[in-house]
Image (cartoon, rainbow, N blue to C red; front, side):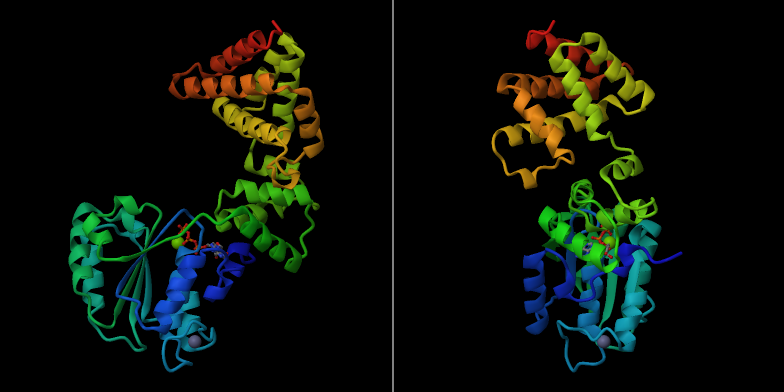
Length: 363
Ligand SMILES: Nc1ncnc2c1ncn2[C@@H]1O[C@H](COP(=O)(O)OP(=O)(O)OP(=O)(O)O)[C@@H](O)[C@H]1O
Ligand SMILES: [Mg+2]
Ligand SMILES: [Zn+2]
């Protein structure tokens, strides 16, 4: 199998890391001034650069081609290469999910004692929130007095699950969700280098579906690349099994035209035939209507999360503020009801459609 895009484009220097500006500055300064400390905590949502940064840091510290830690590791020496392939003797990556027990921590405590071949022995511990209670207790001791040659980089998506006492022993670096503009820029670069044929609206959709995670964005691109080019929004919607925008737009249209039979048939089509859950319908409906509302309020067109801008513009023109507001309120109401409903969730969609048509005077 060919390498995934996420792996191929894993950043190798802090410069290449997209976003995370304050973390980049703080880490660069800490490396230059030799003030890194012994225990770092990298937290934040999936696929935002925690493990990548941990590896960059390890290479920055242990690169053999420089006399002291550098922010520009060479990428070629035995250490740098071993770190990138996960085979370095001094930089050990462990996924705590594989062994969350206290024995796992004891093993690390033993291993950390022997001197490193290069400058430091570095443990990159992933998913540390998986540690059991007793393992956290043991980890606390370990982190209290690590040997001077040790560096621990704890990574987690759920830092709140760690003991306060562990967190307070770490220098904490909270990774942010990567901004849409930054994801778009990175994606555009990869699309050009890889010569991928993709429509502009599809690029925007990929960015929006990634939810701030660069890995999710690249994984999705890997997936839709398997389709026959060009990559379109329809192919992406189908690949992620998301409700196509036009289905929801159809529904909004028949509701506001006052066609009760067609409106209920549409609900039936989307849920029973196409197989989307009522929750997916209300979610997509709410996000789409909010974008249409923004469009109506004069929000810049190119910032909107809508693929079919032409149709959305027509909808925005045809819907008055009162109707738009009613649509959003009813869907929101349905959204809440569906959350708490047992089995008959779809009924709340029908109720919302009926209420709405009544409210806007179409029934
Ligand atoms: N900030 C970023 N800059 C550039 N690429 C990134 C960034 N974040 C993620 N990526 C891309 O996503 C891939 C995975 O990133 P990484 O393993 O560092 O994420 P993570 O934060 O550790 O995720 P997880 O919480 O799932 O372990 C990278 O190989 C890279 O292709
Ligand atoms: Mg990771
Ligand atoms: Zn090197």
